[in-house]
Image (cartoon, rainbow over all chains, first blue to last red; front, side):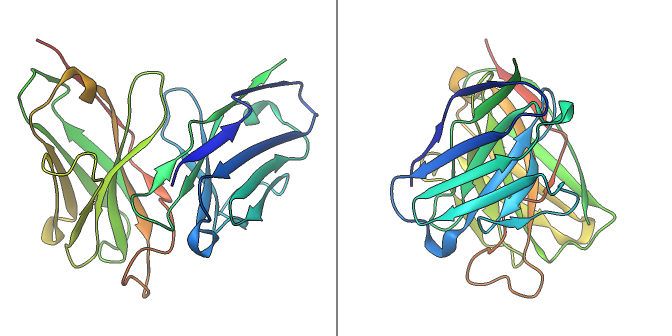
Length: 107
Length: 125
């Protein structure tokens, strides 16, 4: 399954809302879609699994949604620590695949 | 939850074999799918493969034939070997774990929630 993330880069200011998209080439079984956040020089951090289940310690300003082939990650009000690269990943159909990433940068 | 620490050689020559190991600390071992992922410089993430709690591996077809992932339950470690290296294998390699608890079969149901720190591997003559 090929995952296409958009936009490639999102330039926003702290306090603004961010909406990231992840589109799959075919329906993801069981909506097994995850979102990760990665900062420079660090390993990815799991944010959401099964499309909308929040991982431990993830602030509630983050929200995952979607089903089938269209998924989104929303950050209601960006904090300085939220500027990073975000990846979606499907683990419903082997081989598990990642999107190419969306960079959220400070405007 | 488990914490991961990985190690292995970082500079290799073409045709050599990459060997990395990941140790699992402060957590149970046999309730995770143990996974390797890589990230070429400036690029996205690629799933290499995984091994389930019973030791059965599952590989990305793009690397099939070159990759071996194994577990050492007694030492709470798992390892990656990637043979016939080329420059295209240059990447940061991450070990990771996907928790499965008591529901580990036939396939994982959760993504990778614990990660190692990453090892930079450069393939160059």
